[in-house]
Image (spheres, rainbow, N blue to C red):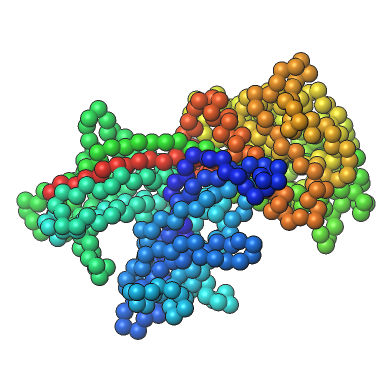
Length: 541
């Protein structure tokens, strides 16, 4: 339904909570493009003239933010309009896209227009995906189509379209230039597009480029096409330019001496970098939580409502999973006796598969947690350092690569006092040098003084030998403070510091994380999307 095309550098912005002494929010600019296919045809004589209106939800009310241009007589429109939004990592920002058949040229209000369908999602879901495809629905959940996020060089009005060819052979519109009127040698304006959108970070992925002669009725004349790759584009430099012959297959077959329909020239290229996240969860299974079979236990599985561990896990996890590269969570436990020998473990996979401790999405973690409880014996002590050291070691594998692209988030759910406080402080100091943030949610009514010390908000955390952390990477929040608040409020509070921690890490290392290897699934964006700039693309006859 929408493509997140680019994201600018994170900037500080004061949130409403900041005025009350709350955390300072981080805001990024995100650009979205939309397209539709198989729209309903509401016009009697012609096809629908669609326009997409973007709505945002604020305090439960939907208001219009912006709208696309109207595309005449088209049931598969690909809109050139770019929606620019402020993106807050820690918030679930709800969006609604409504498609209308517009009548008249003077007013494009929706009162007298035909509603072709709508769809809702969150901005985080769009940012996290290469492309979001969702069906459109009319009122009462009725299906209304599916949206998708798709003369020679004589005196013509040329414009250029760039399409990415996906693995399944489908084509995705990446960029459409402006129309240059009555020009044989157009030079289009510079533009930016993310490498994820351009080629899914695969430098050898084919790009199909089409040149058209604009027609105001929507019946554009095909001039020619060519195929390119991002690897070819990178050959530019040292004053040299990259060129492609623009070919019209029809003329090539008919004309014996046909050479081309013009030449397309790439005159400049600039590349910026990106960062992504990977999430892990660690759950406290010490005996201080109480017998899970007892309704007073913090681990009691109530068939009618989730316990505090599940509430915290779902509230934070559902936000985090929008930014996890593969939607798989490493799910760990500590402080329990585990089968088959029932020895105490402070670092075990709650799915009991040490070779693959990951679960599919946050729901998979919930199911693994519920299946794990009857099979283990809650014990102790509350040793947190082994899991922190494990995830820090995993993060260090990324840090050793000078163009490291992945950032890690560790969510720890615990009920109280840390037994290995000295080792935990040492582990956090070591971890502060790695691409890692640690979120601790305190469950229950125990004394969380140790957790507040680890947070470091009241002073710089130091190792037992006095070494300070390189940067503050721990955020602690007691769940009891949010018992009557919405899950979104908890998630916003615990995640508010993460974007700044990401920026601090990469700034300290003075490295620009590069996109992931092409064979990987498209990762989730945490901070800056990679942006390539293609200024002054020109054509000559």
